[in-house]
Image (cartoon, rainbow, N blue to C red; front, side, top):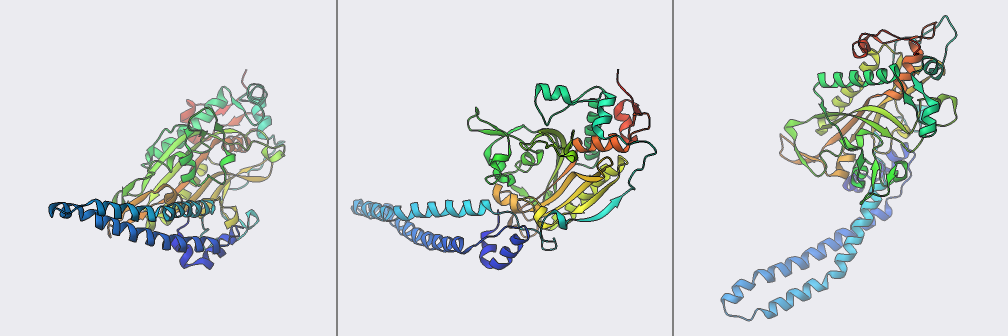
Length: 426
């Protein structure tokens, strides 16, 4: 949620920044409503103050032996006189809140305007792999080795799903264990989240109300709950409605969860197999920081997510997203994109984002500044570290051998029981 005071003070700047995201807005009605709310609030508070003053005089009047019924009558008349204004005030507050909740986050000023066509690759790691044999795509490799079963997944679930089998399941679990061990080593607290979340969680994360239809809803729960689309949605709600000790920030968390996305795969070749689906596994990082800490913590998360791909020995790049390609809730995003040889394209395996105080305002997540003792809104940051559904295809393609086997990245060998190559399963 954007700061209403910022909109009042720097209206044109806010309009210009939102335009970089492709979002056009007219604040005239909002500012008029805000002014009317201010006026109504003043009038209501003045009457309430007068009523409170009269009520406070009752004990003294009783002590003096005076009839207090006249005072009670005056208080009743005063309270009745503002009932209409209180209802109008409540309606105005709801209207203002709904308007603010629909607004996307402001992009950082240094971001280019426009969409993905203006994204900028700022780091490239390793060289594109070359092969002396005919390259197979990850679907061919997986089916040849018998480690991923698409047909039976479609039979028991439908399109956009897959089943890890045998060494494929072990490879998936090895990746998750590798990621988690790296985060534990670096001092992140592990969290196991519920997969069913309430509406307030989606609202705080910035996914609702605008993207309410992009998640899977369970209609039989009361109130309705949805399947988490990413662990970020749960992690950024851990401290909802709390005031944190600023001297203890940043707080660093990670969680492994399956992720459930309403948008499934398409028939485009670049989204074959595991590239896009209804359900996939991911380890997610979230930090709560003080305002002045968030730029440095953002770079820490970029470095951390990048290091995982680098340790796997995969060729990848880091891209700085243009304003219009940043998600609704984020002010800044760098994507870590792994190379898929069969498609000759890069696919995002981690989005590292800084929401600044956008999510914290929605969730009333605050901290007490250790220097000034003032209460401020926290900054929230997140990073996938990592999504396995694109890391596995990259491993199967970049590490494939001429005989159809796949070499296991060195860092995963201990998590694979010492196995160094995945051969065809019987």
